[in-house]
Image 1: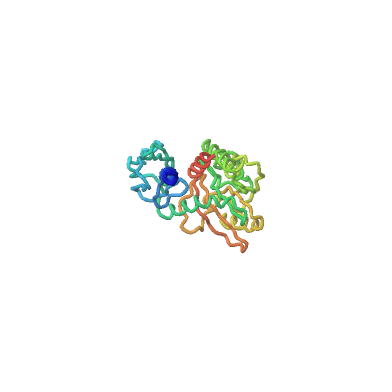
Image 2 (image 1 turned 90 degrees about the vertical axis):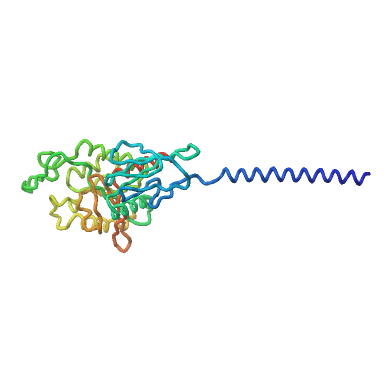
Length: 313
């Protein structure tokens, strides 16, 4: 009888052990199910919450079903609940909200480029922002001055007037109020994302110099006539060549530079099309003094980048 009693106790212990193991297995299974990956956008050319497209009609692809809506008011850009984009915009950033099946929401952006070349340049620049923080080589953010639509350049005036350096709209084109706000916002962005700019260069034109000044980055601004616009450039080199020479002179510093200049500084860069006022592009120069274009980030893209990075804090 004692032996039988012991066997019963052993059976009870074994059943209890199996029960514990079963509960543990079920709990583990549930935990694994709860830890499934978050739903994401899987469309090609989607990176860091920005989708780059070059077609007027595009279907967003996702890992799980979602509904979509635009957050802006641009009537030329529309998106259906199922994620079908139709638009007639060119090089514009649009804000979108995706709502997943569980009710969670994801905000992201769409950059509608004017063509494949521009789309690729924008995507390349967007990815390259991360490398601007590295200290392994010299890099530059080259900005076309902010919106300047006030006044007219006095190209017919004699050089003795120094008209191109004037901040008088009767002598040279100046920043608009919107251009001044753009410049100030650039400063907010660069300071907000801790962009490690160490040196600033500007052309002699007031509109370029003020673009850099209004950022209020706490750095001196070196005025360099080699990156003047073609409106008045007697340095003996084009502004694009002037930019390269500045990079060559700074190659040993392995620092991030900023240049405030004009549209023609992008001349000679293969297939580079759009560079609106306040837009930027990136350059790097290696120890061998070879320079290389690294993509474009437009002003609206910088605004989106600041929004994205701020939401991570």
